[in-house]
Length: 149
Image (cartoon, rainbow, N blue to C red; front, side, top):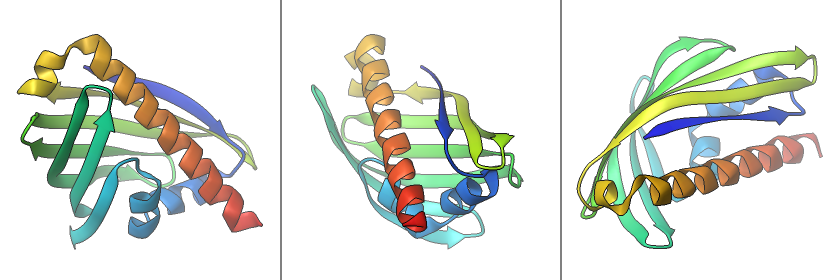
């Protein structure tokens, strides 16, 4: 399944980068994540609960941050498993400065699923991925706004 999207933020690329590289912030703004624990340099153990329509499950696995080009881009390497299937994904995140206080965040990647997740269907899973990315962007916006206020 292809994962792509873009979102414009009213914040500098540097500010967004620092939020995305902070473990506590990332755990707070990522939908479904109940625990994000650092196990090494740019390596995390992640536990997530995802429930949307017919899809629900408790996932656990690893999340790695690779190819960091501060403050422009990095790759998220995700391997999660659950009773309803496994997910492996590589997603490139890019921050493009529009101005001093505006940044476009885009992501592009591919997720491979197995088990019930794979059988659920591309359309349903694309809808779930879309909703989760919207929730993530909204939470990141709120996190950036709360820092200023």
